[in-house]
Image 1 (cartoon, one colour):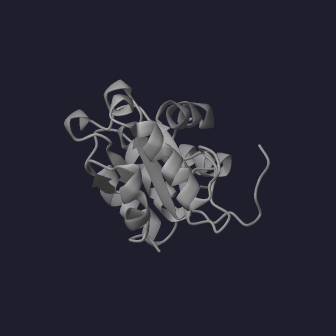
Image 2 (cartoon, rainbow, N blue to C red):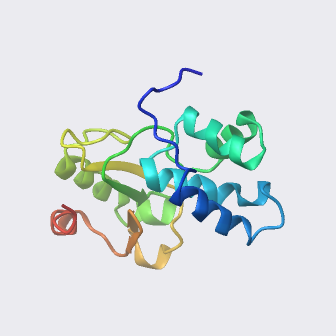
Image 3 (tube, rainbow, N blue to C red):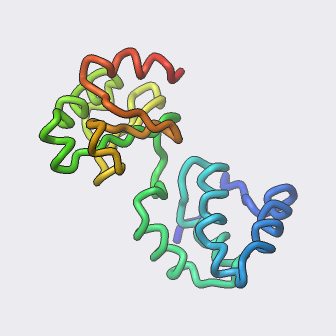
Length: 164
């Protein structure tokens, strides 16, 4: 693994105190892996190999184990993403209700160009996801932590206007 000289450790000072508090809620350090990964992602916006090594060290795990968890869960970013992360549900019920048009509208209006790419201004990254659990309100979209139901291509510009 290549080290990044600009990497800023998360679990020092206040970050260490926060992790120590989290650890009091779990029976083992390993059980606190997901919250520790969230802390890294909140701090850096994504989880690099160096961050996985840091998490492994503070929790007494191997970097390979941590990487296995990071690569299993889709909510962890393994590369830098835009300031606003947009997830559009494209499972069958949503596709029947126009999800493909919603995806195209997001890609066009954010100027991302393609799924997984970040907009030239660094503001947005758009991806497709499997089932956001709101099939009755197609097409659901998750922007950062904001859940939005019944999104249509026509609503995309106004919706994006909320995110500067």
